[in-house]
Image (tube, rainbow, N blue to C red; front, side, top):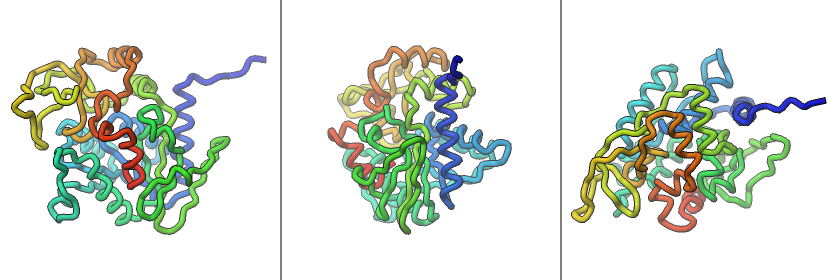
Amino acid sequence: MSSYILPHLDVLESEAVHIVREVAGEFERPVILFSGGKDSAVMLHLALKAFAPAPLHFALLHVDTGHNFPEVLAYRDRVVKQHGLQLHVSSVQEFIDSGELRERPDGTRNPLQTVPLLHAIATHRFDAVFGGGRRDEEKARAKERVFSLRDDFGGWDPRRQRPELWNLYNGRHSPGEHVRVFPLSNFTELDIWQYIAREQIELPEIYYAHEREVFRRDGMWLAPGAWGGSRDDEPVERRTVRYRTVGDMSCTGAVESAAGSVAEIITEIAASRLSERGATRADDRLSEAAMEDRKREGYF
C-alpha cells in the first residue's frame, strides 16, 4: 500500500499553523513581531490562515529604529489597515531622546532594538512573542528551539532549551518570563519565496529589482538615508539592486540583481551560496558570535 506524502510546502505550512494554534491555546497575550519584511509577512499570512474565517486576535508589534526603509513602513501600515489589525510601535528614537539609549558611533540602530522590545513586552504583558527567525539564517538561530524560553530580563540561555519531540511544545513559564515562538524555524529562504509564490503574498517593492542610489562599504551596497550616508571615499552610484532581507538602513545591504519577479528571485536564490544575512547584514559581522550575544541580552 502506497503512503500519502504531502508536498514539502504543505508540510511546512501545516507545522507553522499547528504552532500558531498551539500558542493560542497555551498563552493569554501573544503578539506577532511585524517589521514588514518577507518573513514577518509570511508569518502573518500563516496566522491569518490558522484562524480563518475568524479574525486574527493577536496584536502586532514593530520595533521602529527610526532608520527603516520608507517603502517597508508604508507596506506595514497598508497591511495593518487591510486586515484591521492592532499595531503597537516601540520607537528606538524615543528611547534615545529620553536618554535611555545612546546612538552608536557607527550609526547602526539594529542592536539598540532590544531595550524598546523588552519595554513593550513588559508594558503590554505579552507572554508569547512570535518571531520570523529561521534556522538557516544564522548559526545562533539554528540553536534555538521553536518555543524559546526567555527569562525575566528577556535573556536567552541555550542551556534552558527544552526538548521538542513529536511536535510537543512546552510553553510553561514563570511570572515575568515569556516565550519567543518561531513558526518558520524549518523554512529556508528558498522555501519562503516558493511559499510567497504559491500564496501570492504581497511584499514591499524593495525586494524586487529597482534602481537606487547606493555606495560601497565593507563589501556591501548601502543606501543613504536618515541614518546618514557615504564618506568622502565612498562615491554614490545609481545601480539596479534588490534586498534579500530588510532591517535598519545603516546595516542592511542591497545585492545587485535584475530579478524583478518572484520566479526570477527563486531562480537567483537557488544558485546562491550565501545566506541572506551573511551577504547583506553588517550587524552580524561585528563579531563571530554577534547574534548569539544579542540574543542572550534579549534580542529577537
